[in-house]
Length: 349
Image (tube, rainbow, N blue to C red; front, side, top):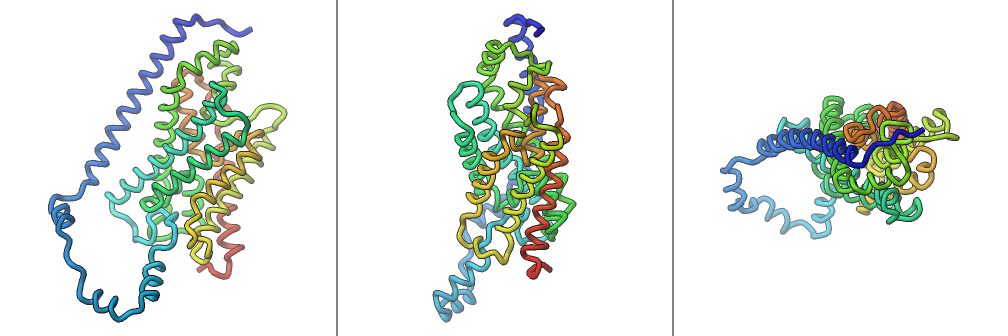
């Protein structure tokens, strides 16, 4: 029998939980604010920016003596590749540069979670989206936007599993194991912020859905509403099937990312890498979401679970959460290795 909770009591409880979440977000915002303040350039640099020095005579002479086509090709060689390597070709970054990269990872993951899980909430609690592909289409948009807006700063990993894969399979001066933890923390923080904002916006719709369906958040029935935050699988899907589905899904995603961003892949020059990655996510969601809700991203799953825990789902929020962390990490490393050490083996150093 499902325990009955009076509506006013439920509202007071939700208000209290939202207040606690607001305090956490406020403190996190202060930390980000301090980080942003430290990123501001000195005044003298701003003055130089207003009055840039003229181009050197060497460059002018060279451009005058070089064919236009050759000059354009030379510029393209330096800027054509999408930066999905965590800092691009730059050497190990300073503390200020690392803070900027962490901020980019937080913002990018925020966009993915806010827009992506927002589509899930829209479908479950308001019936605004119909059919799995409509939800998948929104995820395509979310991933594409997030990559395009942050890739030049941080490499747009936006996923701890992908960050681990880059450190393990394709380490460089600009990204290695030293950055995995800072990136992962930033990604989780961005996911928490995005999910919390969705909770604020959809709070009344969630409460109405639960009241209509006699759902109590802290019980097993709470999974019916908690699934708008983290991912869950239910019978007849077994834990083995779920683990394999999350692993193979992330393997495919990582393979596509590493194959598309490999320096020898001519597709990179087309500029279609972000939407291709977004389409990969959408395709995988269409196939695997009926089984496991298609996570493939520990931050995207764990961050919203934290919000759900504070919002009243308690231990229900973390049901089988380990699977959505371990399986994507294993899958990401396998997919990266398949691209770099098998498909492009002759081109790897």
